[in-house]
Amino acid sequence: MRYRRGLRDDNMVVGANKDTSKRKIMKHKLNAVPSSSILEIDMNELDVEWGQQPKYYHEYATQRAQAQRKLDEAEAELKVVKAEVDRAIRDAPSKYNLADKPTEASIASTIFLQPRYQKAQSIVIASQEHVNIIDAMVRSLDHKKAALENMVRLHGMDYFSSPKVDSENERKINEQRSNKVAKMCAKDRR
Image 1 (tube, one colour):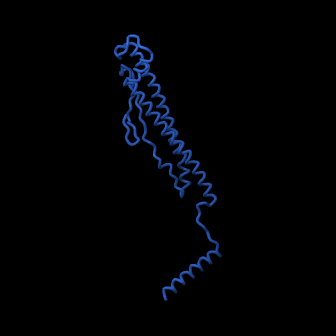
Image 2: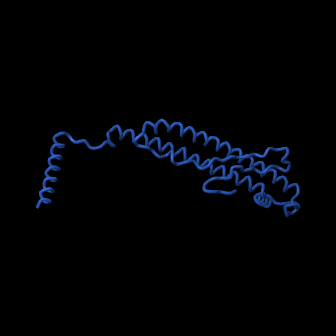
Image 3: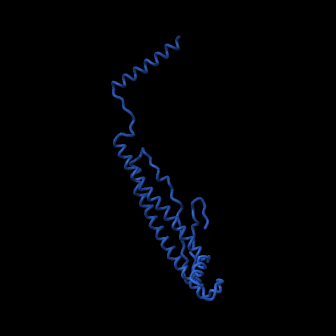
């Protein structure tokens, strides 16, 4: 299986049994790695962020369920491939360079070496990785929700507001500025 910058091959095929015309070959389409840009919060548009949050969560929770279904299908297919390879080995052990009466351990070892089994196993591994990535995104969206809740609380407490000066202090500040400018002008005249 090839990996390119976090993307998996789009058409992964689980190995079929001996007679592929009788069996459908299962294909998996795995989505690209989710974008982390949706996790960023624009603090100036918290209302927009709150409006988008449930949509994002639903989208990725749905993708999580679909990825889990594909993983379950891949695991079931792996079991089928393992059983078929096991039967083939037992039917013709000499074809796999085994004795006429192979041991269970030698059959198990031979199963793991078969390309059909390895391909099915690699699909299970890729499917599990995809579930893990989508699951991480769903958990990240839970964290974003908590961050949004806290930012709204802070906003409600005027945490992000700019400082305000009452009229008496504003008069004093203006007076100090005027005095400072006057002193600077007096120095320049000398």
